[in-house]
Image (tube, rainbow, N blue to C red; front, side, top):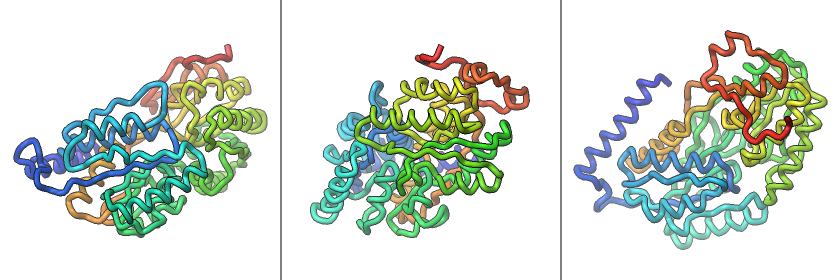
Length: 378
């Protein structure tokens, strides 16, 4: 989507709500939407998406303070939600007791799903749900709750079964953000640069794990390009982050010896553990690509496609919420998000694996990192 159109669209939303307001408080005498939040567990992308959605809502005049800080040293959204409940007043009310996290525990996930369904149907004190991630998107969209459900930060909401297609959610009350063909573009570009024959892919071989990693798209793209996939699976969504990291490290270590390149799928591994995760990959001298985006490149993965900024993602979600508040059904709001993407490269990693990026590659780079924080493989 051209930048000028994106800016124009945002201005239209802002003008609409300013006109509606007349003063600083457009919500006086109008419906206040009580919002609940649910996630599978802590994840830095969830923090970023929540924070920038709140800022987008402020920009549109729907709340008067969306400037929630993203905490350091944790990937939890709990404190952020409480801050929004106390400070973000307006047409959107963040319910103080409306934050639910399963902490990546399957048993807790089931009990939370049941508790939310009962709350919506019996207490009737919720008007809208933010469902962050695949677990929550599935759980909240599978029931006809009769209130809007916004599925956010999902790798592929279509493959996950959250929505029917990119063009139509298939459910009047459900909306998801979709970027069709994103992972096909990633792998195609990675292959065009390195011409590898065997691509290593770590993932969790469960329905949710396959959806999170977009395995269907990875497998189809590999088939089209004539790439052999070397797969390693282990439990990765665990309540114990240390156990999850050990499992992922085991997969990555094996793949470093058996594949020509590594495609690191979405991981809830804390960023400060990524340099350690990359040690066997760098020692093996093979290129690596981060499915999740450039933040992992900053911490030692060789490259990724630079994602849209979280500011753009949050603005997209805020505008979808605004459209529903204006009277549209979630199903009637466009789900397709088309950011312009560039390349991100870590030159320190490139040097350590013996790769000298050609000038034509460097010319396409939007983000360059020259160090690996806290690397321990000197």
